[in-house]
Image (cartoon, rainbow, N blue to C red):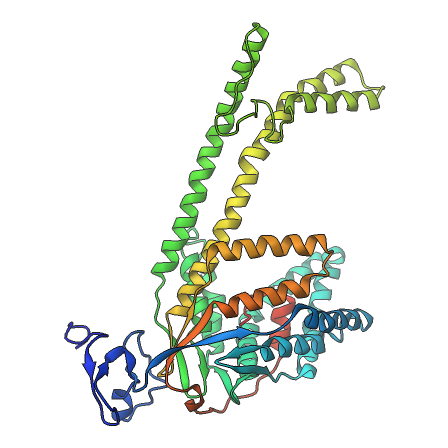
Length: 456
């Protein structure tokens, strides 16, 4: 009836046990329960959930402090170095327990129960593969290639095991998370679809990213509530082509701007030679003359000075070599202008586009995932916020020689928690615990070593 327009979120409904009529969007699902179905395991579209209790937002909160975590971090670093990496497993567990324990949902903290010994076994196995790859790269390259192929073949297995391990060892309100994704599905998403990339000239990449996100978000569960991601790949394509189109447009404009810049500069030099004024000012940058960098430095003069210094340092150069060096002035100046006005802006734009794509698609996946009868998460991370955080965090780490890494980690955790809420009807304590299956931590360690993006 909802699809036909007979019912909508504002329609007043009543069921046994309710004190009064209430809007459809404010009551908990009863139809599936009355039909004998498992409401927690059915795929419930967003907006189609009925609640018997008022819907409210359950906020996330992060209460960790940078100085407090710095003590844990510095001990982890020192002991990991002194033990040649063996302590890394314990360091990982200590870090996760700190961040999980200081992340609260509706006032109750999370917990991480992973065993460092299990992670250590994985570190030794996959660390050995990494060492073989590095050493064989210079001694016997075919073996390095074989190691890469082996890593590619076991990567989907590693990802599935890591997700299952992390979910099982994540606890909230004494209820474990679970992950029901299979190894076969992991191979299909992370390996099988990659063979279609050259056949589709890369156009399948947004779809692959959508399937990988859905493999993660759509297979999670908490107690009896299983998550189902209701979104589609269309949003990924829309966002991807927005970013690609903007980068392409700026690249074209920059490619046209450099030759135009050179023509204007040549005209200015001709005017100067004819005794006319050479002060051709760029309208968008008052006080900056053609042939100068935005800082007011004359590129031509600086290049010429550098060439003459190079000639002075090499008195043995022949007149022909000196002439060739002087003739390179135009080429060097043009390359410098290309770097300043084309390459650097394009890289900056790619950085901005990457953040935009990450934020938009992550918010979309989180917001379109329904956690059974419980409710759904809402991510309100903003692009401009993340751009500022990445820039200021990178600057802080660089200027502090890495000592502010704990501050950066705490800052990011606090921001993400403040921008995430759980929209649910009723008490979270009503969620029944479900038994999870303990899994090996080998995949967890291997994924961390080889930089697979599978973190929660």
